[in-house]
Every structure is written in C-alpha cells, then in structure tokens.
Amino acid sequence: MNHEEMNQRFSRLENEIAELNKKLSTLMPSEDEKKRRDEQFAAFDDYCRKVMSRNLSECFSIHNDNFSELEWECNRPSFVVSGDAGKITISENGKVTPPSHQHSEELIEFAIDYLKNNKKQGLMKRVGRCMGYLQVAAEIEALASGADKDAIVREALLRDFNTPPFKKVPAYWLHPGLTYLKVRI
Picture (cartoon, rainbow, N blue to C red):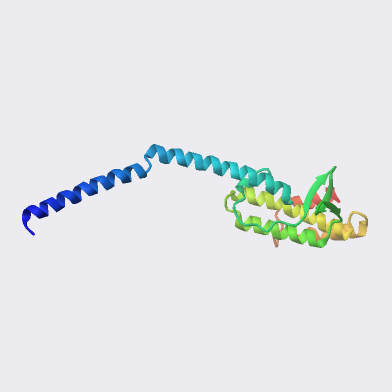
C-alpha cells in the first residue's frame, strides 16, 4: 500500500467519522433538551408522590400530611389510630377495636423505626413526632390495662410511667409524657 492509498483511506475514515458524529449529535439531546426532560421527570415524580401520599393516607394507620418525606421502607402498624372527640379510637380493617397491649407494642416499634431510619427529616422533627407516637402508645397501654376505669390501676400505671431518664432528676424537670397521660386517662 502506497502513501496515496493510505491518505485516501484516512480521508474516507475521517469522512465516515464526521458522518457518524453528525448522526450521534442528532441522537444526543442538547442541554436544553436535557433540562426539559429533567423538568418533565421532576413533574412526574411530584405527581407520583402526591398519588402515593393519597394512597398511603387511605391505606395506612397514622395519618401524616406529608408522606412524600417518608422515603424509607417502614413497618407501619396494621391499625388506624384517631383521636375522635378527645378519645382514642383504634380501627382495624374498618372496624373499631378495643385498645390492646399489641397495639401499643406495634406503635412503639413503628416509632423506633421512624426515629432510626427516616433520615430525610431533621432530628428534632423525628424526635418530636416519635414522642407523640410514644405518648399515644402509652395512652393505648393505659386503656388496655383498664386505667380509665379503675383508679388503683390508674395510679399504679402513672407511678410506673413516671421514670425520668436521669439517675438524679434535674430541678424543674418536666415529664411531658406523664402530664399528657394524666390528662388523657
């Protein structure tokens, strides 16, 4: 192969490469096209989150107005807790059921899972929400024990519940869970 044939081959290869680059450029989206696609995907993602939020609020127990923030795989309780007219009501499969120890255990497990695994929300939001879940779990446990009907059971339960997390309780220690439970039962 002589020098002239090699130049012709190089020239043909360069032409083929140029044609392939043209075809590739038509197949590859421009920056504007990429931005438009990203916006479409974001809109679709928002729509899916809204549908998921609506479906979750219909299917699962503890009602949350912002299910789109729940990104972790959670083990939600199998029952619905509501506070109708200031009284705890528990529903399973659409039927009202009396509060049980199992209900409070499931709610406690959910609160722990929520606190540990829902990293999308800030720590104080998670702690605050979990304190609420635990207060409701304590109320369910008190109702399951009959504390709402028997004063002796009520006093024993409140005594057991009044367990601060300190060896020496600081001055002015507030026990919000105890205050809540005294009012509720």
